[in-house]
Image (cartoon, rainbow, N blue to C red; front, side, top):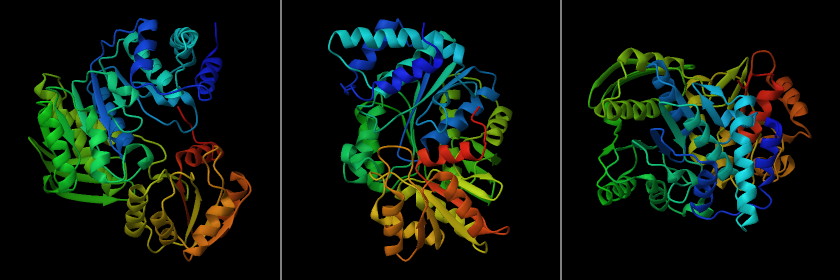
Length: 426
């Protein structure tokens, strides 16, 4: 019997040998494990905002009295964060209970010449746990894209597509329309789908995909936001959708979270049409109590944000301009080489002139020295640190007692920083 730690090691170990094989691998894992996939699912795709949207909806349904499973990626500090039951990461006991059959199934497939990937194993583990623990609902975040993603084996009762941006272009396409087409691959026959406000060309992609599946489609629009008052720690917003939602308090800061919350409200309306009881009090409580780490998260004078693509960095810039314009600001950052796009460099320099760079702990990382040089070429004053701890001390010294540190970049970087700051993951 493997321990929880050994199960996680086995999942990570499949990175070296695993090979994506459409949906076949994850279906085979589930078949070996005897998972029926009986849980009602809500499926969420998109470039940015998937995790926040999933977290808000999970919080709302939990407040309504349901047992809710939540599957997201990547994790920040510990693997179990990816799989949550009523907001609590999967316990070691449950990792053992569902992880051992998973590893046995992966070995059986390997004997047949099929080598599964870590994400396929994680998806199978989550679906097994949600079924085995009798969840009333499970909210499933797409890993990448949608059409070919391992999560796209589920038959959801509702879908959502959040903001579309340029990311994973080597896999999903070079234009917003191509990327939107991949995300729209989660749309299922006769299944309602809610889409975050998007430009007209992207809206057309969603409309065509929904029509082909005879799927009821709700394309959201900025005009549905009647009034909004934001602050450093969240927003109070009124909406007119199918129903009117007045003075909804959103606990996640950033203007984009107002639109993510609108997506959640539209999903709630769709669930209500399916006779799922979600009282307004539960919606208010769930939105007001949502916690989603490393998304404009404050720890003392350190702001942590996993802004790792141009759209995410633009949202961070908006927040900084709105609430930190008069503050002395120091940027503390580490990024992945395959995520850094040229326009992000200018955005980062806009956030703060004084910058400390670090190398995230992953083979995909851009070295701190290369990153600092690129930022300096764009007019920044960047210096490279040899370790995360050293970089944090340098940033703290530069900020002084009155300044703020904006820690932005890869979620690998954000998770390591949360650990360095002794922030809890459970």
